[in-house]
Image 1: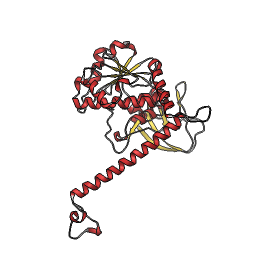
Image 2: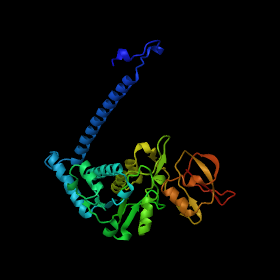
Image 3: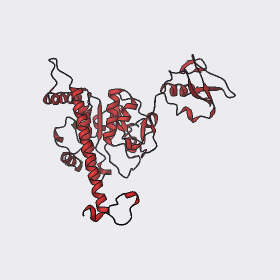
Image 4: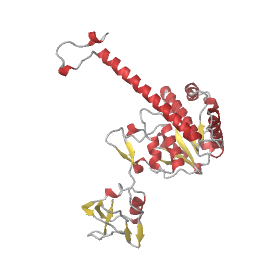
Length: 350
């Protein structure tokens, strides 16, 4: 239907044209196509930039060719099968998924392999409990070109049969334990589960029944909420993998969580405080403070360990849960300030 036919007759406010529903849908579709073209163009430029940065230059001054770069990536992945950080995807949870959800998990496994290839320090990836006659394996083959040639370990055995129990750390959003580091001595198991109904405690219950240690990503400790978002702490399998591999490369949870958690979740990394580490002198707790900064006096009697941890890690949120006293503007701090109040102490914390 042409624009003249779709355009409504009668008085129009401020001279604006009003179109019928089919015309509006066409305009939205054209805008969507244009946005996708721009996104593809931007990703292509970013990919070229990344290739230039990773390839560096040879000794003779020439850049690595695509063939040489491909060979370099292959050598890295092969080396990871020997000495890389072990990360396991537990594919034995397919009984909790529909056929559609299994297809989505297969796509996420493809993204995991792509992220691993891009990493300068790839991980040693295991796909456990993945049976070749199963529906999940067929989805992996159909949705990921060259899946049979992936430089990863694929087995129908369970992770409990491959690794020692004291080596295994099962990552679960329902765990009460916080993952504080990624150790080369441990193997980190990610539950291969796409659960659109968000059923709780599936991975936690399985790990508890097997006597396996569990942990959750430190999202609450290093991320804070923005104004908008879903604020869900349940991440896709490939997003958890991206967090682990980024932390292994940077040793920074803020960067790792920022790289793995999508913006639609509504989380951003917490800002680091410019406080110096906490110093202790007997029963006195001294906090070295920068100059010309406004702080809050906080009443209470926190433990030495809790206060030291909050100051050293820059996490003021646990401190702010205590009872708040009056606000004071501090003009200058040469060394440190500690004052007594009607309680045991009154601490100056950012």
